[in-house]
Image (cartoon, rainbow over all chains, first blue to last red; front, top):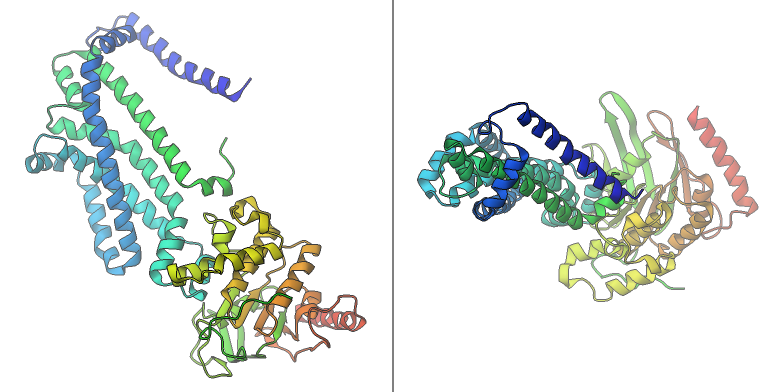
Length: 255
Length: 260
C-alpha cells in the first residue's frame, strides 16, 4: 500500500470515528440546541456558507496580518536583544509582563483605542504571537555553534557580519519553531479579540449565534475555523521548510 | 606548480613572522593543564605538535589564535613586532562549513564578509580553481550536507587557503580523511602553504614527519613541549624514507612514554 493511500485511510478514520460517536450521542437523545447532529451542522453550513465565509474572511485577514506583524516585531526584538545588551535588561521583563497580563484584560482597551474594526484584533494576534517568536529566535541566536563564532573571530568578521551571516541563518530553525507555535496560537487570539467587540468575524458570528441558540450555525462556524487553522498551520510549515531547506538536509527526515 | 596569487600587501609581511609563546598557562580551576609553557614557531616553516588527547594542544592553538583569554603572564608575540590579529587562518577539527551555503560560498565567506562588494573580482575563479585541485570542482554548488566528511574537510582546507594569511593554525585537519585522500590533501596543503608559518596539531606521527620542519611532542601534567625533531629534506616527504621511519619509531616511543 502506498503511503498516500495509508495516510488517506488514516484521515478517513480520524474524521469518521468522531463523527459516528457524535451522531450516536445525538441519537441517544440530546436536544438539538445543546448539540446539533453532524447532518444538522452540514445543512447549516450549506445554507449559510456565504455568510460564514465572509466572516471567515475577516478572521483570516486578522490572523494573517497579526501573525506577520507579531513575527516581524518578535524577530526584530530578538535581534536587538542579542546584539545590544541593555535591550535584554528591559525587553525581557516587558515581554513577560506582556504575556502575564491576560489578553481579555487588554482587549477592551485595544477596542477603545483602535475601534471595532480589524485593527485591535490584529494587535491582539500580534501580541500573542510576539512572545513565542521572540523567545524562540532569541534562544536560537544565543546558541550558535561556538566553532562558527571562533571561525568568525579569526576571520575578523564585524559583529554585524557575524550576526547577519552566521548567527541569524544558524538560528533560522529556532525562529521557525517559534513561528509554528505562533501559527497555532494565532486563530485563538483573533477569536478572543472578536469576542470583546466586533461587528464581523467568526468569533463575532459564534457569539451572535450562541446568544440566539443558533447552535448548528455556530458549529458550522467552528468547523470552518478548524479547517482554516489546520490549513494555515500546514501552509506556514511548508513555507518554513522551503525557506530552511538546508535543515532537512542535515536532520534525518521525520517519517 | 600553481601558487596562490600574491596576497594583498597589508595582509602579509614579506616573510611570515615567527611566533614566540612564553609562560603559557592554562588552568580550569585548580586543574592545571600547562604552566610556564614555551614554544617557538619558526617563521615560514611548518611546526607539528603531537601529544596525547586532553594534554591541551587544542587550547594552545586557540590561545595563539586569540580565541581564549590570554593570562597576564603569558606572552605570545611575533618576531616582526607586529600584532598577530588579522594575520591568522584557522582550521579546526570540525569542518565548520555553514550548512546553508554552497561549497563555493563557504570557501569564499571570509573575503566576502570582510570586503562585501569590494571583494577581489577573481575570488570566485580562484576558489573554483582550488576546489578543482581537491577534487571538488563538480561539487562547488552543492551544500555541505550533500558531501562526505572527507570532501567537507577538503572544502574547509580550501577556505583556509583562500584566507591567504601568513600564519596558519590547523587542529587535526586531516584526521577525518581516508588514507589515500589524506596523503593527497597533505601534499596539496604542503604545496600551497609552503613558506607560511604553520602550526599543525595532529595525532599521527607519520603525518607530522611528512609535513613538519619541526616536530614537537607535548606531554606531562603540567604539560611541556620537548626539543624539536627536525627531519631532513623538504616536505612533503615520502613516508617510505628510512630516515622518516626511524624518526617514526622514536616519536612513537616518546608518545608512549608521554601517555603513561
